Image (cartoon, one colour):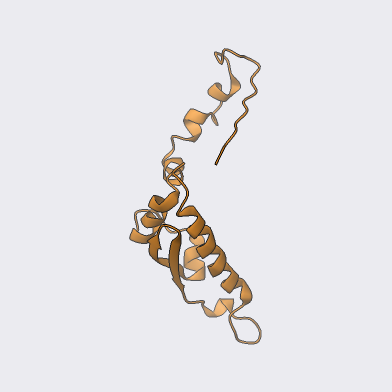
Length: 116
């Protein structure tokens, strides 16, 4: 994977560069505890979700979905939809099923990404 970054500054010496002086500068932005946790991604981040070292995302409580197994390229979730996810016919709404599939697929991809 190749990532290209272009920085456009009025001051080529960066002595008075806006990115270094602003509250959203790289030093500020990427040194917060949340940003450091997010930079783990990959398998370490997912293992942290599994063992409780990382907080579960808010949707996990609402949707009753949680990881039960993590390995590189594979993650297993379990879930039990509450009645709020039932459609008018009394069956589980397809949106809940899509949420489970999307979560598993996205996390499986993240499990093979390098940190950062």
